Image 1 (tube, rainbow, N blue to C red):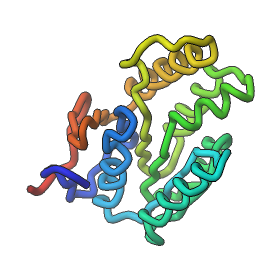
Image 2 (tube, rainbow, N blue to C red; image 1 turned 60 degrees about the horizontal axis):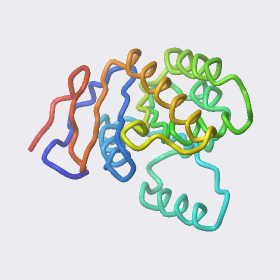
Image 3 (tube, rainbow, N blue to C red; image 1 turned 180 degrees about the vertical axis):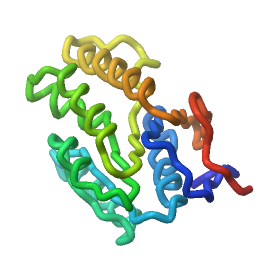
Length: 187
């Protein structure tokens, strides 16, 4: 984790949303939150390895996390993966921004899938940290599929933020609390 904010207490809300742009440091920050709880850690990965570059990226991320994490791959059945988490763990979902297009491309009802996800987060026995990208700060996409994704991601982020007890935006590796309070920290 970068910066001087290093969580050290294991007091976490039931649901935390960590949001930011690509390469903002949001995943590293979310991992730091999970590690600081001193709970067993479950990492739910939503990416699909469509090509060699993505396969290498996934392998690198898994190696960086190390063996202290239980990794569950759930590009579609995120709700089932959340239901399997025992209450003693902390769950990190990385990320909603890869999960959503899996469903968009499968041409399912995105609002219904989002509602199921929010229900699964609420029902999860363990505290949940979800990482998501803020995708609305750029130009309006030039094609209908990209616009549909941007709009659906924005709606999902708003719904998650409304439900979360803690919402942290990360920019340039720095956390900005939008809602709630970070667990106590040390410098």
